[in-house]
Image (cartoon, rainbow, N blue to C red; front, side):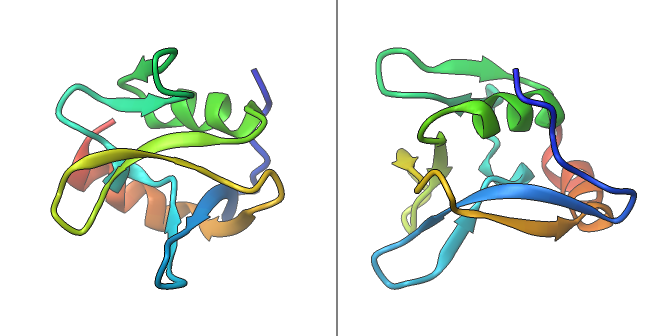
Length: 101
């Protein structure tokens, strides 16, 4: 499993670019009732802990995860392997409180 690149303030998080150009980051809002689902269809792994899920998805080539679409259905997206941006750690922690994990 890849070591998550982070500082006390920022964490590198993969993202998927939607058809409309918006970025969907792998954040706690991607948690389904049963947890985070990552990996290719048919070989998905489930995690209840966000930080463990992030470490695993960040090590995938390419990163793949389920996220809710505009109708609220969870579908798998495949990210460009270079599509990572820094996100504030305190924002992620706030989202974890909201969504769990």
